[in-house]
Length: 283
DNA sequence: CTCCAGGCGTTCC
DNA sequence: GGAACGCATGGA
Figure 1 (tube, chains in turn brown, red, yellow):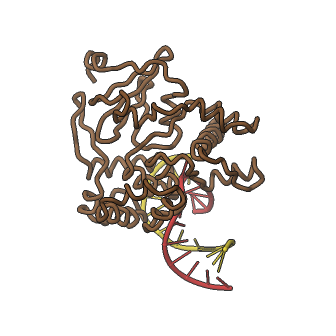
Figure 2 (cartoon, rainbow, N blue to C red):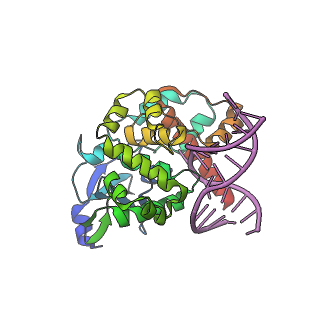
Figure 3 (cartoon, rainbow, N blue to C red):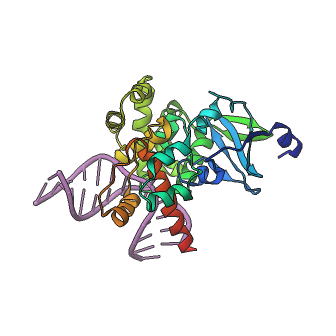
């Protein structure tokens, strides 16, 4: 990458409270961002390139498009308009686990991802691990996404439902999706045939929205919750999987607590906290 | 070799 | 209603 170009196009976002680039992109909520050699994170969202890094407690960004001002695509994507400090103060009062988890992952923001990408990505995530999920999505994008140039490099957008439908189930299977290929096709078909599908889902309260998504073959409560949290910013949706059930069993006596309005965010703090501890123990 | 990974559909009782 | 099982794949 051209260094002069990088410096010239980098914008400083200032000191962002409750904002950690590493935590945001390393907490398992998105699959198209990776750490660079120089410790930044870069990736593709909404068919554009974005790179973020921290220096002297300041956040810097590089993109092939503007959008960091109020209402811009990165402003929305990074959820810059939300006061996470206030949310943390209002939800984490158990004095123990939740407090520690929110403190540990306090820089997490729930990214407002593309709705189709979120749904499709978490269909792929089922019975799968994060490195392999990333590889599969990368293949889908390279094969069926639209290419574009940014800073002298070629990147690929996430494929549209139409592009995947045109490719056909066999080709999607060949990207390593396995038994999920038919699920991806059914989701693509639903979204392609009903242009208002996501807008309808968005208008529904979370429980009804989940039921609507679960009509798609291969979408269960977990995939629906992830899609609604990360694609629709429905913060009360809590993606409870086998992993989280173990945590609830360990700390809450097996029952899944009701974390209320911000259950999804609280769950993400817990997920990141417990997972990081486990990963560190393995090292 | 077996086991597991941010699950879900099917089949059985 | 819920427990058991298969599913594609690759890394540990």
